[in-house]
Image (cartoon, rainbow, N blue to C red; front, side, top):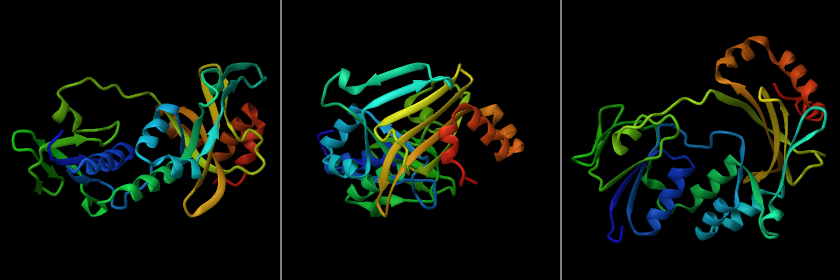
Length: 262
């Protein structure tokens, strides 16, 4: 888009944040609509791959990311008895490559601070309809916004708008989810590795160093436990004590980090 355009971005997650920065820098007028009353991160932590780090470098945001993130050199997975199932090192591709584990809250803050027009974010506004002919969007209260030259649906995996702006498509609900939380890193020895344990294809547990975030200098780990979606109600019913016993049986070292989790 070589000429300035008016753009509506629906959703202020990572994609919406990055788009708002890049399009505003190209002198487009950007309005962002977010359904949450208080926009913020969703999730604990994640692993930025070299491709994502390259994008952040091109956005001139890599120093801020590296300030808070934790460099990850190795991806290692094993069975409960210690047999290696996965052992990949970035250095096998190139000595200069690595991933970065990061708290979602840290990346959210870095991206939010980089957008020069935060006043164009309209929170507590769920967009439910797109009028492609007139370039308008309608919120759940019935108010129309626009017109816009471009409407971008960045409202996540459960988007109800994608079919309206991009044509029909077939979405299948992924049957697996995960329990997750952030834990103090403490004396965890694998400070530059993603560590996972597998019980065949039925169970997966992982710990990823994710560094710090603005306002919190405590290095942390992102803990996750894979769980079929249809088992979540059973997990809630069974209670924490029974689940912690399962964690202890699969990975005693990880169980030790969860003692204060309620």
